[in-house]
Image (cartoon, rainbow, N blue to C red; front, side, top):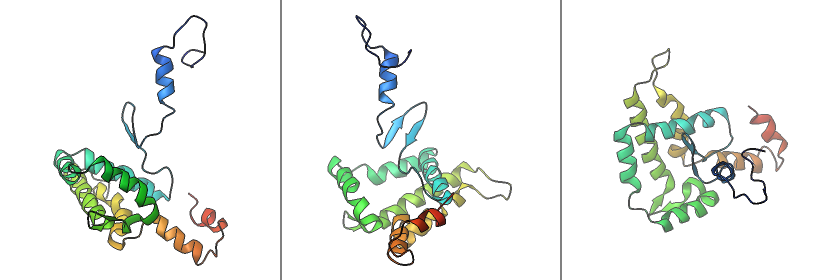
Amino acid sequence: LKGKLVARPGELPTINDWADHVTTAFPEVRRKKYLEMRGADSGPLPMLSALPALWVGLLYDQGALDAALDLVKGWSVADHDFLRRETPKTGLATKFKGRPLSELGREVVEIAHAGLRARKRLDAQGRDETIYLAPLDRAVASGHALADELLEKWKGEWKGEFAPLFRDYAY
């Protein structure tokens, strides 16, 4: 049972026991051999590609990283708590520091675009990684996130049924 937290008479837990234990925590960011960003666990393929592209754009270019830090450096713990509490309720329409979150989102996505362009990683067609940000571009431009789209369909064409979700969003 190596590495498992098991009561052993006369023995204290080991560092391996601790390592196993901390893998059970699911904070927003989890440090492994890399940073695991837990902002989304599922969704349509374009959104699943957009999330890592966003983080790569923000974190892998020093200019983008500095711009992102400038954007949030004055935020308090209360600001973070407010966003964590309110955003699930009101999405990109959440009012934060006097403006809708979609405006802040637009700034964040623009920073990510700049970071990805700076990386100059091109596909076979000569496109850079910014192509993966398209769903986020649409969301911040419209102010509607995927959750808003799903809720509209549930209230409308799906008539309160969940079965179409599995049909229309299977991947």
